[in-house]
Length: 150
Image (cartoon, rainbow, N blue to C red):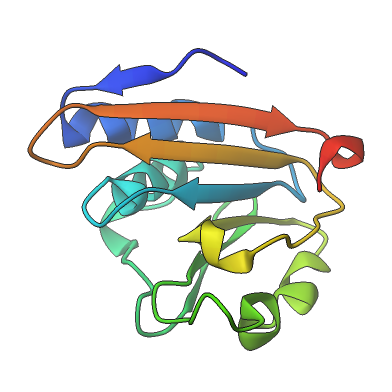
């Protein structure tokens, strides 16, 4: 696990996302965890910016559940599970199996804890964001290769 990084502003969270984009390859899944206001969407905007997509076009898919962004590098599926009950089969609700079958895509999932013990056959970035917009955020990123995923 890489050391956690402290981001003192939304701009630093955005920058961290932009740098994280440089590490991504097709098939990767990013699981974002953190409270309301922690910066999950700010980090996602930075990731899309790092993939040469207009970050002003990135919005939280709280009501749509899934937004698709076609970047010059990958198709990025941005998923928000906030409105999905934690005891439901969240992966089934959003059609996650079909999304994961896309060959040139990256999947970013906000509120990933609602997936329970969902198993991925791809590289996973576990991202834990602690703090909110009123205080510095601590962001820890752990990368697991497919053999390590649960």
